[in-house]
Structure formats: C-alpha cells, structure tokens
Length: 227
Image (tube, rainbow, N blue to C red; front, side, top):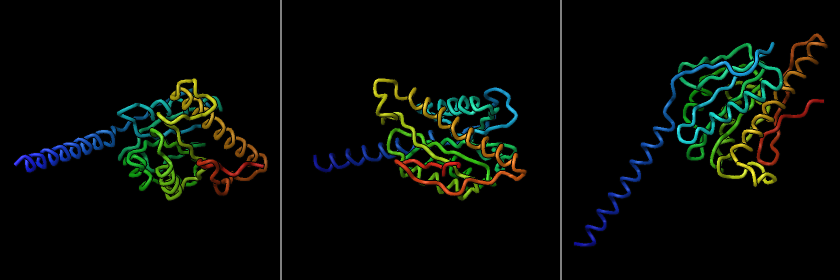
C-alpha cells in the first residue's frame, strides 16, 4: 500500500513539474503586443532593431538599448520594434537590421522564428544576437539558418549570456554590463562597415553590393572583411 502511495506521489510531482514548465514556457514565449519606438539621434540613415521582450530577466530588452547606442554612435537613427504578427514583414529604407532573440530549450524564441519564417528582409544587411544563460550555440545556428531563409544579407551573429562570462578578461565586472558593452561595440562596428561600403559604392557610381558569405570563428559568425 505504501509503495502504491509513493508511486502516486511521484507521479503527481512529475505532472506538477510538467504543468509548471509548460506554463512558464507559454508565459515567456507568448507573443508581445506590437510596439515601435524611436531610439537614438536622428541620422541620415536608419537602423532597425527587432526583438522579443525577455519577460523573465529583461536581458534582450537591455541588449536592444545597447545596440541602439552602438548604431547611434555610428551616426544612424534607430527604430526598435517587437516581433509580432503585426510587425512589417518587409522592412524597407533601413541601412542595417539587428535581430535579438532569446534562447529557450536550445532554440530561438517562438516569436523570432515565426517572424523570420514569414519575413522578407530582401538583402538588407543584418546582424543577429542570441541571448541566453550560457548554452546558446544550437539556438544561434538555428537563428543563422532562419536569417538566411528570410533573405537577409547576414553580416554577423553573436551570443551574449546572463550567466556564462561574456569576456574572460573582465570577470571582475558585472556580466550584464559587459554584455551591453559588447553589444554596443558589435552594432557600431557592423554599422560602420555597412556605411563605409555604401560610401565606396556611391563614389564608384554603383549600387551597394552584399558582402559575400559569413565565416565561423570562435563560435560566432563574422562577416568577410572589407578590403
């Protein structure tokens, strides 16, 4: 009799854990309302940040603000939008786009994947950030594939973490602050490369051409360098 009761108790605990996990998953991955903000200074060229809000740690939200500062440093005006069913699937008139996704169960979040599966980024230079606790590589690879399918001109991707150190040389600093610094620099450098390429093409009297291919280095994607 005691063994039967113990089995029922264990079964009840397992069911409770599964229900709790499902509830949390639905909560954090539920699509947010569509929101569009203007961030940063007004530049001649514009940048767009697309993201799914992080309901548990607000990490992706903080990263979008750091990216916006990086784009602003490069002289761009910045729009930020949540990825929802109402988000424009063909963003136009942007010099560069940044996609910020959260990692859940080794996958990019559902709103990111749904948006990229129906979007047409039409060759716009794009960078991606995979945010997570630490185990993000599988999700980052899936994000890369989704970005390529969307038609984006993928320039670079990067993983940034809440728990795992983002820079082994800055272990004494706040890890989230380090992630913000990296995101800002990442966005600035990508934007400057895009702007420089556009200036070269303009001087040559030719339309800008995409950087061909991306290379994997140290676990992150890096665009082929300009020469």
